[in-house]
Length: 159
Image (cartoon, rainbow, N blue to C red; front, side, top):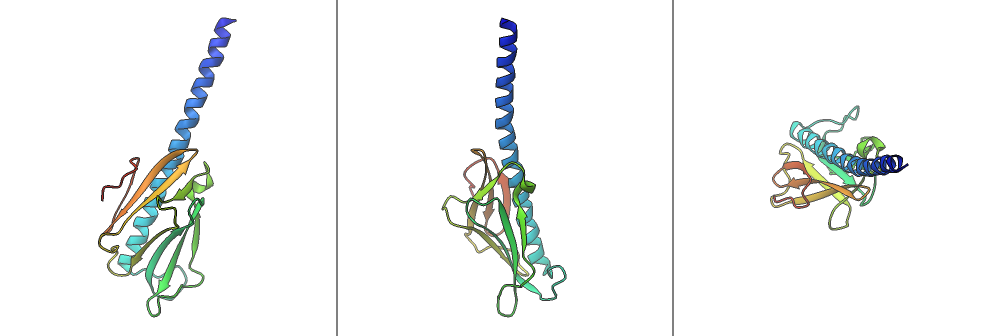
């Protein structure tokens, strides 16, 4: 009887430990996803990419998310009037919708990063920390001017 109780307790401890690891893994995967998306958007701005089947040339490449949301939006603005290019938006779920991961930043405002065409840099001195959270476990993406982007488990970017 004692052996059975010990096995049950050990199984419960192992299960709880794995749940915590899964939440951290979900946050880490989402951080890598966001960092890769930001690098891709930066590369698009360097190459002057036209968006999909849209023939309008894009000059502003934007990453936006509402604080606490589980997805983010990629959008583009034209070169002439810097107005939104209709039909070019992409809404992307964090971590493919697995693990209930949310996106936020320390200021509590919306998450927004923009790259301009042909230089791919952010404004000098621009720093943004994006937090990805899954069940209380955090991972971070740091975006530092003039264009350094990396994911980390440390809550300070140190740009």
